[in-house]
Length: 495
Image 1 (cartoon, rainbow, N blue to C red):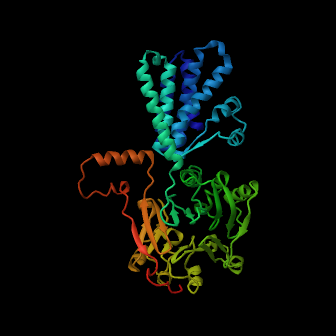
Image 2 (image 1 turned 120 degrees about the horizontal axis):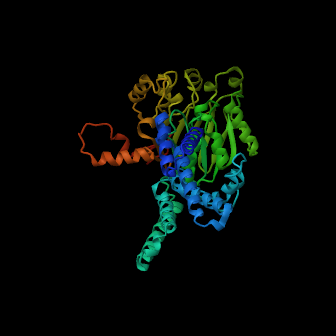
Image 3 (image 1 turned 90 degrees about the horizontal axis):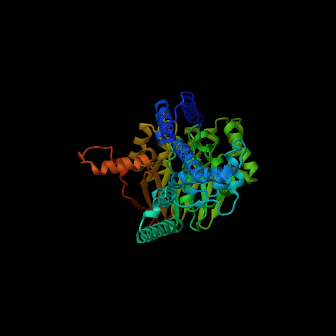
């Protein structure tokens, strides 16, 4: 944002110094081009889209207000605020599933007093935010609203026939109502329990929905200076599914690729309890997470082997670590929470980032499982041959993104496939969804495409196929796989 602002102000200052008066659109366009030359990645950056849209909207509102000089500075300020909200709302609806009309009021303080934090006050205003299912459908009515307001402001609406205006108004109302209804009402759940292994890149974020529509989150993906999986992936997922509260947030351990997005989640939804291994770390990320827990007065508990969470017929049991293990182990990966989820005959094991040493400790305690969330993103130091033989998974999920660590290891993938497990990778196919009624389970995988990715897929569908290209694979949803978890005619033996 600082680079974009500096580019814009520099071009504007040079134009004034040279006694030139270029159109504002030309200055904004040149500034945007300069920023793209310096950093081409801003083309797909939502922050850049919002910055540009806010500048365009603010200037549009200011120009509109100048047509009414009697309004003075107050009118210009209000019009600029309206313009900023109007021009950014299609983007926030598309990406985040949220639009904030309260921003019109909040910006009245934010524009002249940019250094003061007014967002927390605005967030508390009742009905100040409109939430829906993030995507083109929810963005469409806000695009229509923007086009409608611009058209009315241009003065050309007066020349439109009354009947045509009536037809357009009714059409816009129908589209708005249908999109609004589908955005707020679509809550389709298959099976009694769902597990979502989200595509958050090089990290873990797993959401579990119990049969009574209560939700649990295990980790929230990585966070860096340029990417927060909690804010960019997990929170939008929660909004799309209408999730306003979580029964528990379980943090497997304190490394950035698991803990990074947790703070953003804690800020957005109500959380019943936070569970973690209790290994204190001195990193700024861990201290920020603790500060967020303390600020919201959340119940923080230490997870130990033998603990369990039971909701309806779903049990989430902690298998590792023990207190003795944490006392003598300093490596956060080896202190990861290992969680066993059981629902009816269905068993799933979440292994965090544990390595071979912990796996040997667990060999006598782990049950056969239907699904294994592969440890440490498929690292060669995890998922030993003995561990796989003890678990006998029929499905293995590797949560992994682009990395320089060699994850997942070819040896691990080959080991899993030789054991008969179907392997799903989030970097190859996107989010993995597991649905179960306790007797059967179903695995679906489909990538959540970015705006640019969606456009590229549409172009690829129009191009002739050469029959051998793998470039289309990300655009195709794989067929679901349904597997039994236990005998459908007799009770399952103890496992």
